[in-house]
Amino acid sequence: MHALVVFFDAEADAKIRDLWRKVGATFEYPPHLTYAVAGTIGPKVRAELREDLSRLWLPDLWLHTLGVFATTENVLQLGAVVDSELLAVHSAIHDVLAGRVKNPNAYYLPGNWVPHCTLLHGVADDEIVRAFTALHPVEPIRAKVREMSIVDTQTAGIDPLRKASTAPR
Image (cartoon, rainbow, N blue to C red; front, side):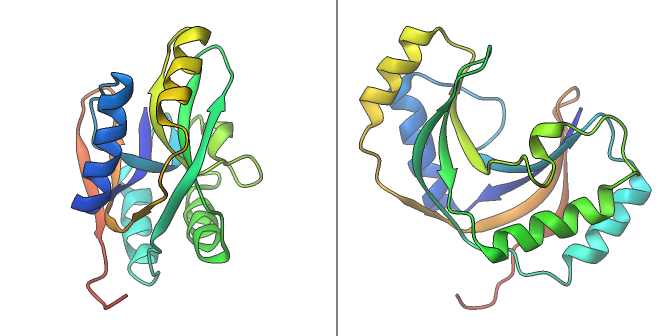
């Protein structure tokens, strides 16, 4: 499976990792926010994404809403503030992906997407409750985007699509 994600600046990364430590979470990849997931995001689509993304500003993210996706996987997450800039990037990505990737994950499609950074997943209900209690209230985190990449969840490969803008914020 391929995921299109953004990784955060060092300060936000460290703050998220501190939250992970507090709840005993470990992950294979650095803290991130996922824009899209599909069975395959091939080379031609990646090239088009690189071109389109070169024209877009990758906005900072404000991660501040501690929440839970109460599914069979139980996910504790830090939700991002949804604004027009974030939705514009999401929409541009999905305009490129539409009809060109195999098995897109419906959770990440426009209209369904809940932008977030995962803090804990795949644990029992009582563990989610304990973790939520341990982190609440959570301090908001301003996450500057360091890089947008495609992550291959089977090979653990990371293919950078775009480094963050160096323009002043």
